[in-house]
Structure formats: C-alpha cells, structure tokens
Image (cartoon, rainbow, N blue to C red):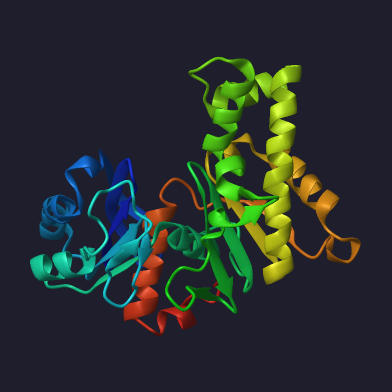
Length: 302
C-alpha cells in the first residue's frame, strides 16, 4: 500500500492528512487558514504542516485541493481566491516539490469533491455527472466520460456567477444568501443554517416563505445545468445537504417543477456522500490519475 499526503486548503480552514491509494484516510488534522497573512506566507505554512507527516509516513506524493482557479500543470493559483490576499500567482506545487522532492498535484477544491464523489461517493460508477457545493458560494465540478472537465482555462464549473433573472446565482441561492435573506426578512442577526432549517421544520410562516423563494432559485439554476450537461446525476453537497432526504426530495421536486416535461426523470438528484474528507480524498484521486495512469484501470468504479 502506498500513501499520499493530502492537503485541502479552504478560505477558513486547512484539512490535511495521509490517504492510502485505495482512498482510506489514515490520519487527519485541521487548522485555521492563516488567510490574512497572504499567499506567500501560506506557501511556507504548508511546508511546515507537511514536514512532520513526510518524515513519519514517507508519502509517494503530495495532493493539494485548494480554493481558486488553478492551472493543473503548474499548480499556480490563477484567481478567484479572494479569501487569501496575494494568493494568485502562488504555486503550492512548486513550493512543496522544492521542499520535499516528491510529485505534487494541485486541483480546485470543488473539482476534488467531484473526483471524491466519483471514486468513493454518490457518483461511484457514474460516467456523466456534475457536483455542486452550496456554501458561501456555489461551486461545481464536471465529469464527462469519467474524466474531470476543466475547460479551456481551468475555469469550468464556476456556475455560481451565472445570472438568473438578472441575479448572480450564488448571491441569492447559496447558503450564505439564505442567511442574509432571513436576516433581512426578520430584522434579526445571528442566524445560521441550522437555526433557519429548524424554524422551517417548525412551519414558521415567515421563514418558510424565504426558504421557498431560495429553493426555487436554487432549483432553477440546477435545471439550467441539466439542460446544459444532461448528466446522469447531480450531486449536491454543502452544509444544507445534512438535512438529508427531506432536502433532496424538496430540491428534486423543485427541479422537476421548472424542467420541461421531456427532461424530467433524465437526471437523478443525489446528496454528496464522500464525507468530511472529500477534498483530501479527491485530491488523492487526482494525484493517482496524474502520476499512475494505470490507476483508472485498477479502479473501474470511476
């Protein structure tokens, strides 16, 4: 068994650990992202986090999942990473390869979630699917014929920026958008997703009205993606997916309500199931596909 050091860089937290070549997470830890100190500092910090694990586990490589648009060849952050000042232009790949002399891959965080879902999660065995994460924004990953589709400039799946009725989708259909809408409707602060959904389940009329409007916009955006990609499955992740089957069913029904009849039933709506370490698992999958081309043949599930 070979192991990979996997690092999942988010705007607020970094998850990192050791993942086996079968996807099993053998060791994991989590720290706050030193975002305000900027990209160059973060490169040094990643090396500090990695050093003890490299010494203890001797990984054959390092797999990085990160926020932002990423050049998969050079590992350079191209943009869309405002949470970390001066992150654009940095290359975790270059920094980690220089420090540890092992192959390093870097991929967008939601692309890694898509890879994890196709390998270990809700899209296992599926050749055509899209994965969405609904959180602060709405990001996505696209898998076509079993392969990750990045686009001409590694910017595919940034559908949070698309416009629906003149509204940027993620500004009105993300989880953070729902919280803002509830705060505006109630005139109260300190709302979070858990509290909103509890009030929704309690049939609070004011909250139900806000959630219904939010869910309609979320469903409309996903319906548009179904028209564009004709996927076998849409995998939905993010905090709201913890609501489970009631949320999945409400979303699926909402999507059917806005789809044209001929498109209903073509695509299955599923909740993400690769778990809390999906970014690390997907980054590992990306490393294996990049550095061991026969790995795809050894794992026919994806």
